[in-house]
Image (cartoon, rainbow, N blue to C red; front, side, top):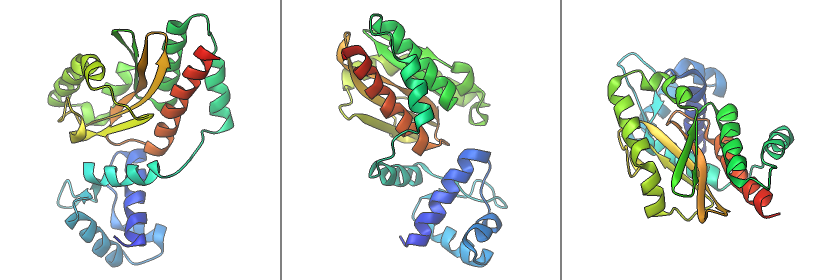
Length: 233
């Protein structure tokens, strides 16, 4: 893939995350300062590679799970600390070292506020969730089929986490990559941290695959780190 194609894919993903509608060649032509025909040729190649798709004949393009994975892998190679304002907000909410359960719940609520996704964390053998309304307010989940798939994913998430025990500091499961709820259209972004309940505790978010991955991944990872620092300082 050429550097320009990488940038076009990045632009499609980030623009689609903002507006929730297919991204057309005319917009990208203005961004890159080239003709719409040039952009259409590049988009056609990205589509042949399976990185983007055209949902309707006359529409622009949207990313596929494969396209999101390529983008996320690129982000994983970067080091992007959260900004100072976010760091202060986390420090203020994740500070009650004498009540770890309350601290974890507060951290989840903070993720909900900052990402507008569903937030979740394991507390012993329980899964604490907050922000379900945020999740089902997304346009992707307007159909009953998607709602049922998401409900199935949530029903099975806690036992799967305890069984699979993802071992990376940050794990991202995109769409069909999800071991449960493959057709839910969701991305699960979780951070592993130590707590009094388990050395493999998890906190993160569940949202549509149409996600602002860069900011959310950085925030989820930093939240896990902040929890461990607060609990064991």
